[in-house]
Length: 177
Image 1 (tube, helix red, strand yellow):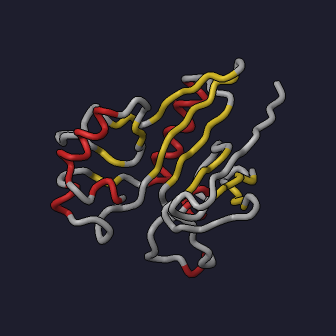
Image 2: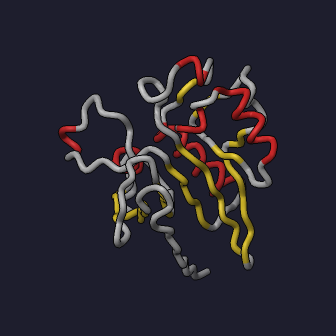
Image 3: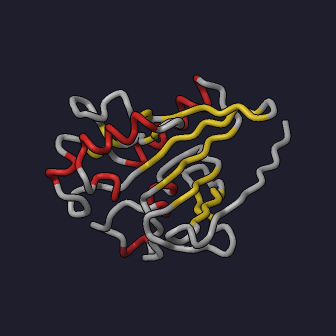
């Protein structure tokens, strides 16, 4: 969310210099300086494995000054995640789907979450088919993976590596065909 601190023009300038895809699946950038610069997903191929990657971000209202994000529209993270999984697994035939999330971790019990911002926990519980979540925003550090059950009853692994790059995560995913 701090990429918005200096406004959209500055963000667009920096994004144009990136030599990697800038991802966000749940903001609508139509009519802004970022339209066309930010992609909803990317596909990476490694050793014969097709990996779909998409990204979710928090609601900016109350987090970022409105003058810094302009007319960008926030879209429901769980709805966008489900659309991305369908696209990446069914149409693009990805073997693995990874969500990079900046929604944050929220240990508040589910029954007490009414009115709270969407988090990794709450969004995953409303989705199907995400294979792995790499999360941030809440500055939470996990010594080991946490798991959230999705709508299909699958346990989705989630990792969070704290803040300020004090910890850097490394994960090995083993797949069988």
